[in-house]
Length: 129
Image 1 (cartoon, rainbow, N blue to C red):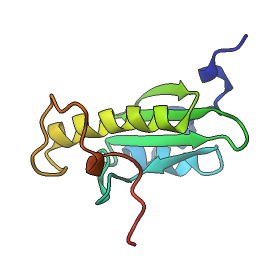
Image 2 (cartoon, helix red, strand yellow; image 1 turned 135 degrees about the horizontal axis):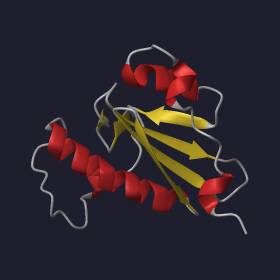
Image 3 (cartoon, helix red, strand yellow; image 1 turned 90 degrees about the vertical axis):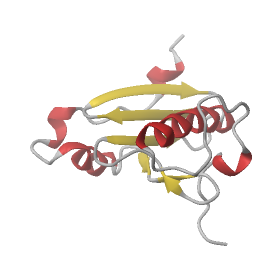
């Protein structure tokens, strides 16, 4: 039986985007791949990552309980697969917390030992209401 991660669409490799500076080329290559870059996270849409050096991408496969999470960090790509959107988003919450603290570009008052992460810092940004 295939692992969940093997069922996800392939991500572009570094050679695919040539000489485009850093992660912007990778973001461009995501178009049409089933993956999409996530620029904002949490209730207020705080920056997720530090483009073009740190990028988070999600994959949602219609009709299939399979959700992908990719992290791009200065050319290194890590991929995880989850059986539910909730699991994938919980993993993204953890990544967001770490990135906001290390990049100092997230909400005020965050600490590394926050558990559980307060709801306002969690989940996809839904835009203005």
